[in-house]
Length: 283
Image 1: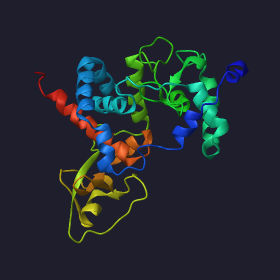
Image 2: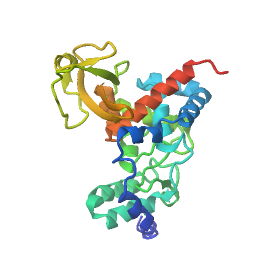
Image 3: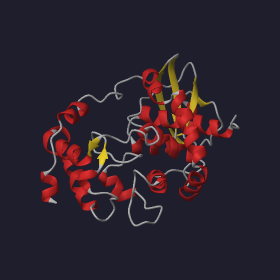
Image 4: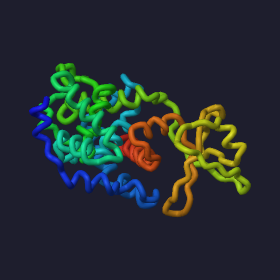
C-alpha cells in the first residue's frame, strides 16, 4: 500500500478544477442546455435500445425505471464515452493532502480506495482512471459508494464499473434503491401558482409538506398526484421566466446522487425524453 501511495503525483490541474465548479452557479435556463440536449437524448435512446433486455431486467430487479439508470450514465459520462482521464490515486491524494476545505472527506475516500483493493476493484489501484474528484466508472462512484452500493451483477467476483454493463447498471440502480426510491411513485410535476400563493423557501429538496398543504398554499399540480404524498417546492429560473415544480421523494433520492436540484431535474427530464424516444417506433 505504501509503495502504491508513494507513486501518487500531485496534479495542479485537479486543484484548479475543484476550485471552479463549472455548472453549480448557473441558473436553470443555462444549466439545462448542458445536459438535456438532442444528442444526449438520441444517444440515450440508442443506448436503451441496444441494452433493453439488461436494463429492463435490472429495472425490474431493483424497482428503478431503466430510463433513470440510462439518464444518470448519460449525464455523468456521456454513456461511458468520458469516464474521466485522471488517475484516481493522483486525484484523491492531491485533494486529500493539498485541498484543506475538503481534506477530511478526500482522506476518507483515499483510505477506502485501499480498503477496496483485491476485494471489490476490477483493476489495480494505480491503473484506475476517473474524474478530477476521484469518481470512477460510467456512473462515477467514489470509493465509499463502491463499498456501500456497487454490485457484482455479472457474478465474476469483482466489481467492474468500466467494462461490465451488468455491474454498471445494477450499481446505479442499487444506489437509488438503497436511498429509498419508490417504485411507481412521482418524481416531479409542474405547479400552477395561485395569485395569492403563500411564499415558501425550502432549505433543501426533502419533501416535508403533504401535497394537499401545498395546494392549500396555492401550488396546484398540473398532473393528478395523491393528496397525501409528501412534497416540496422547487423554483427554477427558466428560459421563459420562473418555473414552479412540486418535487417528491424520488426527486430527493436523485439529489442523494448529486445534491444539486438542477442536476436532479436535468436527470429527470433527460430520463423522460429517453423514455418517450424509446416508446416511439424506430424509423
